[in-house]
Image (cartoon, rainbow, N blue to C red):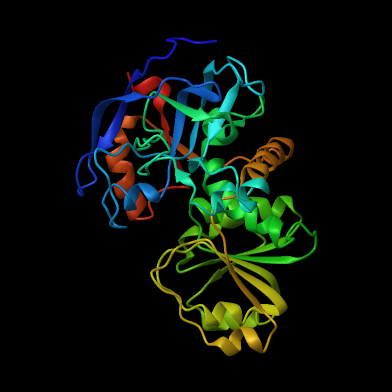
Length: 356
């Protein structure tokens, strides 16, 4: 079913126009819906730490004007002639990438985010047709159906948005490293958008979860709101020493530079340490790994197969991110608050009711 057969369509968004990163209204065109595409009216979009980096050209590759946002949810408004898996009115989501080669081993395994030719990110990337991708701080988006995910009908759209980046970024390595084993122990470093989802997934998997934070400020919420079993102030040497060789897994979601060795010492023999935050550097003594048969691993957002599984898992187990819903006019203030870690635990923009 086609709204404007073969025609590009005007879209309204909020864009950064220079390295200040300041976002303001911006009109642009989305491509016409192709035979394999889905067009989505965006209802909500999460605000990720990526919105601090790319609009301000922190990675040196910014292309302006730039419409950010890669935790996108909404309602299908149009489908291409070859699309059978979606219909008008379906609740759907789009995550951190909107294209890949669809031919390499990784794509064939459903790990498109690791595409050999490079996944095409949801914004600030050149798509195969030469256009620059623009993200979810906008009224609608057109994507190939492979990179579109059905949101279970009973799951609130606003809550689903953070799952498309924060959620899958921790769910993927947790499944890959077999953390869904009840009775095992998990440490979570950093209690932000990613960290709080790691706690929620850990508890759903039946793990004993310890949260590590630099201050005691988040203790009550970690234990009472998120359900963690233990809270440790990482600067307290006595508390840290007491946990020596006690954890099967650690997920590190902290983005600032911090000592990794002292956390690796908390792992049991054969324990696994997962980096999902992005500090500018990681320093460790190789013996920390060698003498304990320990594994240090990284992980990005997950593949399409994992995203579908995660969405179903969250719906079945009633796992919901902790969110603060905001209008798009508050986006610049929200990003400043993210820089100050002043959010519990993910901003979600109400696109549907604030962007006209």
